[in-house]
Length: 205
Length: 124
Image (cartoon, rainbow over all chains, first blue to last red; front, side, top):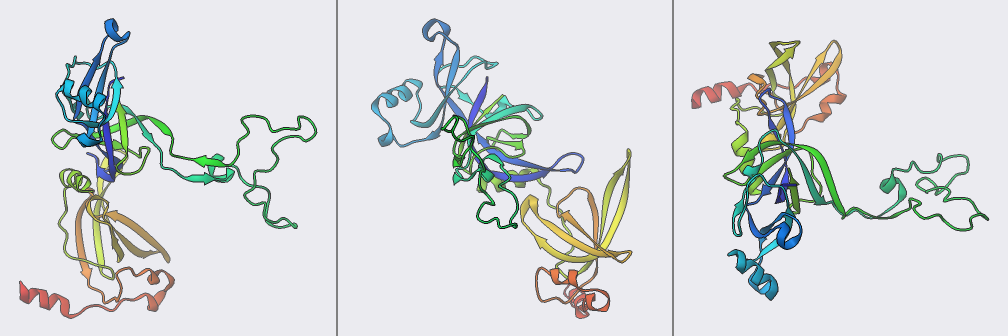
């Protein structure tokens, strides 16, 4: 899938032609540099590797520095492979947010906000155990039974329990692009996207 | 954050309304779509608060309709608002006058600022 690397800026809302308020997320999308073009002959598949975000040279390893120098660019922070672009790109080309058009539908991949160690009510939408009365105490947000007793004498794999929540890769599909501002490299996507402000996301066409 | 403001500046047309704040009585003229016809409606009441900035700026207007309190939140820069008239300037001590919700009848009145109109007239 064709796409671009971007940075989540934050949320705002704009008015459409009918005067309806649309909540949207502002993403700084690109410009990304083509750092590698993969072909079937050499790599076994077709893809374009894009790079985004500045990085200091002293924080770059020598092999990576060589990789960037080959493309004729400064060291970048994030590298992502994309495929199936409409245009053909060469090393060092810039890919901007103009690959998107207003009204297009896209997918956004990001890392969700970390929620820490969470119980089953928040993590798996359990409803807790029973009410608060009839002698019941401290069971309000408990998971309840995890299974039978003497058989199987163990907890089955895959039982939903408390644990770490968030801070994982999330893909959101069917998001509409409301506006594209090519001069500022900004795109506005309808609704929310995963991650906190300033986090890196990939917008797929 | 600056990029967010930049996007808002480009995409939001800032509307210019007469100055108003919480405690003022205003009439808001706004367009509504009925079936496929467009019609103008008005909403007159006391401004409870103004909040937010940029494209998310809103204000709340409260009126008593048939003995029942009705509140409406308008986005300040909404293209649906065609006109905004300030009918009365009220004297209130705070920026958000939610205490008005608990008051009925005579207690819910707001004292009118009398000198305001003459002062501004002179200044102009």
